[in-house]
Image (cartoon, rainbow, N blue to C red; front, side, top):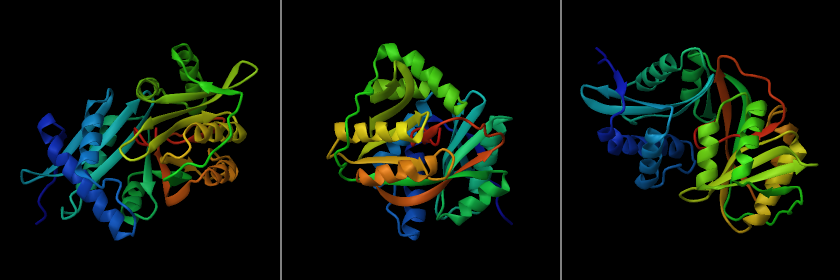
Length: 299
């Protein structure tokens, strides 16, 4: 008889084991499909789990089986929306750990629109999320570069300063339908932001912070694909020679019909793997184009 999986809130003392679960789970599935693990060291998984556990409006659950920690998952609540991830189970864990974790966090999310990034090569996770009511709304490419090519500085692009925060937050809400105030404040405090203005009016922004291995780009939002391309080219010029990673939608909606991806490939990015933006519940039709956040997941 299958032993029951129990789910509870993450406690500070769980974090070392949670980091090991993240590292082992993602390394197992990525290497099984021929991809490099996103957690090449335990330090990276430790930093992520500790940082997520400390974030405001983030809920973390762990799964236990006969008293042993076998899984962990995170949910980021942002007003009427939320994002799920990462979700991880020990490679040798019994079936049902992932489902129990996801369902427990969906219960927390309630009527919110919940979104996540799903690795397209992982058929098991796709089946799980589909059974739980998620649907694909946009194909997404995970793009990386070890050395950014020189881009083009744009006179309409400038560095974001403290006086720009209010306008940036208002612009973001209009073009995403989400309340990401805490995330954008944190990104600006720990990284840098670029603003695109036309005739004094804010038309787009791009945020970046330093990750363990590369610059982590996004979120980024612009009214048009051309505007987002201008921000990307200016970012590349300012950071030429550095490594970088981002998630770019490649469909006809948020991805600007391929124009943004073409620009990024010209700046030295390569596609490491493909994924899906999946959503459960309402998904607002918002104007403009975006680069999806890697941190926190898919917000």
